Image (tube, rainbow, N blue to C red):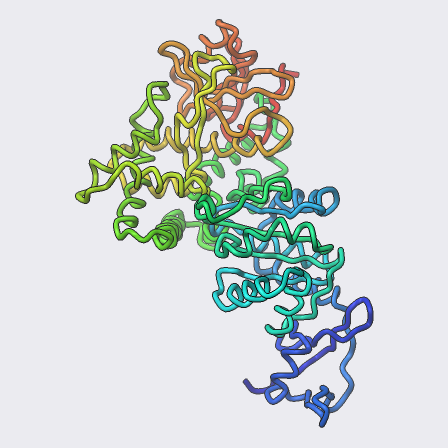
Length: 524
């Protein structure tokens, strides 16, 4: 560790020295004091105070340091994410709640939270609770006193962190909150006692369904983060503006539709996990992206199995992925039984071990809480008043679905159809985080022997029927039936098309599903 030098002293708004800029990063005053022997231009005097060797260092403000860290993050992780808008709304309007950011592993939660806090706060206390030493230290401090501010201040002192400032320009970030029952169960108390803003994040939230975890209902503001949407994916490749400007009824230049469809074809194969998108930006090779996806699935399996004591868990998880995809391919949307039961039967039949349905059900619930799988409800017989829960599964990322498809013997044509439908599901799912639609997740529908891919009800009670196709060769019979029976107000056929209208059905490009909703009620 030669030639390590401090190049600036860092002071906060109160003009108090809080640290130094050393080796391209912020080092607290306490850390610098303990490591003066390896920092060339800092020494300790007889009273243990830091002195400069040579010229007096320039002063940077803590906010300037935070902006430097923000710029470093943006340079390293340049993907533009829409979650930033939701985080800003929370800070402006809902900061008296704890922000609870949900989402699967590896989708960029930590990166986006760090970008946000570096840009908006002076004092940042970020703690990754998956690190045993930090988690144990914080738990011990919390258990020694009933005063939360004292406990956090003591933790900071013991771990050479910057002194805790309990004010509105401070943010406390607890990453991977599910790793600590003690801290999870104190969310409500922390929200009540602390003046600083507070953010918690979680990935494998299936762990929190355990009875030892107390739900902090009423004290948190939930925000869900997903893999990159198609719009975010387009932004990464410079065509987001085109996506939102293109006429969905065919009046734009043909090359614009072709360009977006080509990017859509890439997206449904690789999905929206940041590591995968960055790999495609670098190599432009689908095969390389599939390798990254395989590693992600392996990570999900390893980490998920680690939360269970039974040695069969890995085998169960591996088969649940394939079972879910196979069910999508083989089963109709009918009302007779839940897909969760069909997946359980598939896993039992596919394994040599004595696997119980309960174990399979637990694995499925875990993958849903972990945001790997998503459920789709059903409007029975086209009636929005007759809602049946969990009648279909989808993957929350098209790339994961495509990678799982490679593990099954399902033919390419069927896989293409599933990926198209899965794309529509994930794009429509995002609408349920907005004020546009009613409900909490996409719904399919059946009427007698006719199946409708998706049925959406907006806040004005307008019902939209959506059918997705990989080819426009077949007539959308189900959609026509739903229209004729007045079960939907408008029908949309989404596929490989420029868009138009035919037989009372609006045809729109598949890649505009969701992101261009609400759809126009007429062609202008």
